[in-house]
Length: 87
Image (cartoon, rainbow, N blue to C red; front, side, top):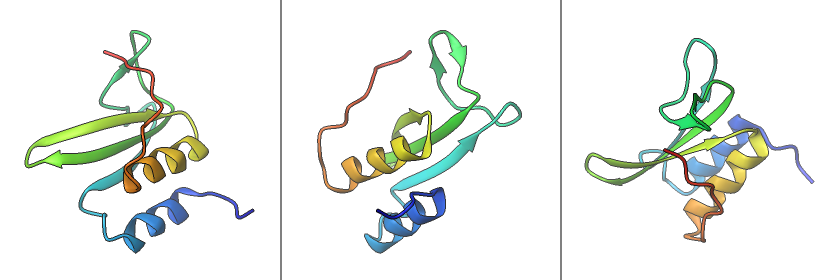
């Protein structure tokens, strides 16, 4: 099984010509996520943005690279997304 990386996941998105619809970014102490998780700012992991309208996005916060790849695949193939809702 091939090792999953953010770069390979971005290439996968490009292969389906969805780079304008799905974006990934790393969340750090300096550049934290756009959502709160458990009442705290999301500071470690990745954010997946899925554009669903002109100014409308679904935002998914992922703890690791494998979760990012799973989220992207579920978006690409229109599968139910296994998420925990947060405020």
